[in-house]
Image: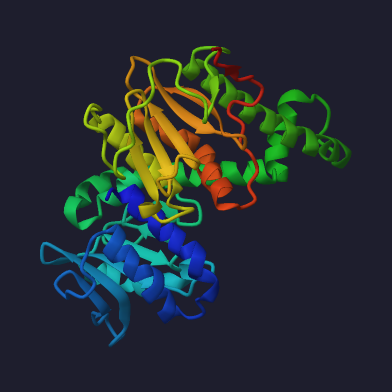
Length: 384
């Protein structure tokens, strides 16, 4: 199982159970230990890999304990301090991490409440833990661009030097993204002033500020939407890129699909490629936030690789049209009408995660807002 699938499985568990977790100890058992074992791959019951209640005397501080120390190649490499789920993380919570960081070999310190994980190192001064994290991973909304960096701390792919070398860039990119996200959510006066003075020649008075606050907010949202739409148009090759077809209609590009095979297997006369399996794994990882991975089944045919909920043809999640020069990802609306979206690689599937999750929610009978691909572009029905 890839790290993306493992992370999504933990995210689903957190979403289901965090309301019932009320203590720090319960947070450790329910979420942090699975993070260490399932996501990172360490044996939490092997003291040669994971040391709970790790103790190292620090100056006059005797007997203080860190919740977990992760050992790799016989050396303590990662320190983890845990707070109760739903408690906001503050740097004041990390006083023991600061002290232990200076007297152990650890180069990575993690402060977590079981849902949000803040990763620290010593970029600013050697052997002194930074006051700001270089990476923040939130399991309520997993940023999959960060998972390759997380994988470098996993037992089977541990690469500390690579993590440290990337930490500086990650630190500032992460902070900039959070600043921008905050401004898009609610522009601050300084941000409004900065933009207003670029387009308005008069004095920036309170009246002008009140006038421009909604304008700045509207302009930023329109700009973001336009950028997304432009990139989609370029990637999809123009306004005729989308093709829609009913999920229940016969495939018009070839003869009838091959007979169904047992779950996860292809019919004898169908060749399942590694690329199709990669695409299937990505779809399964994405929708693990909604259902257990075991319920997401792949079924290959002569013309496409189908991904179904509960191995049921009436519950399509996606179709992978990879048996051609131009690859397509097929997604479905509430009427089971398929929209084929051109993609360049299997990784592009992540860009359409909302469509996949929405399809699963519909099959589960959950209320979910429909997600329209490339708002403003009209899908083109496939003609018989």
